[in-house]
Image 1 (cartoon, rainbow, N blue to C red):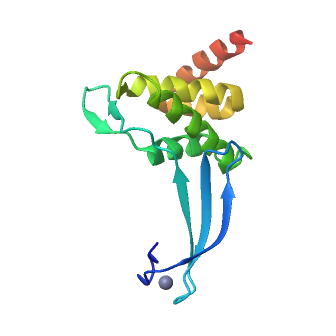
Image 2: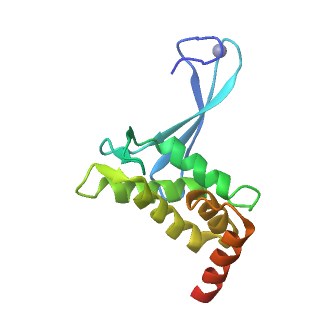
Image 3: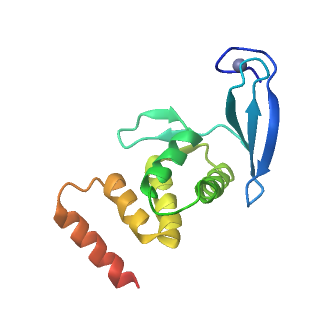
Length: 151
Ligand SMILES: [Zn+2]
């Protein structure tokens, strides 16, 4: 792979690490010419998916976007990036194994909510506040009250 800093055509892999669930590989690379280091990630993609948003606009599914939205919800919660990667792997596998290649954004949102509920309550509420578009403190109150009743 080409170096993103100096465009040198052959960078070297210094270290490869397989995620705990075995479905991703993270490679540390370094450039022999400029000495820069960067990371590449390898994931399984079985098919192309389309996300149908609330307003019926269709956009290609982006794994990175899903990853970042979850990473944002778990920030400062002492949760490993590898854990987030595993959640994304599970969700993507589930979406890809469905019969439809068009997925409603609400379906993805519900899958993320299920995963976060099992992982971390704070991250769960944070994600919900964005996903369900909380606009005032009362929304948080109602939501956490409902969450408390679930237990
Ligand atoms: Zn370079």
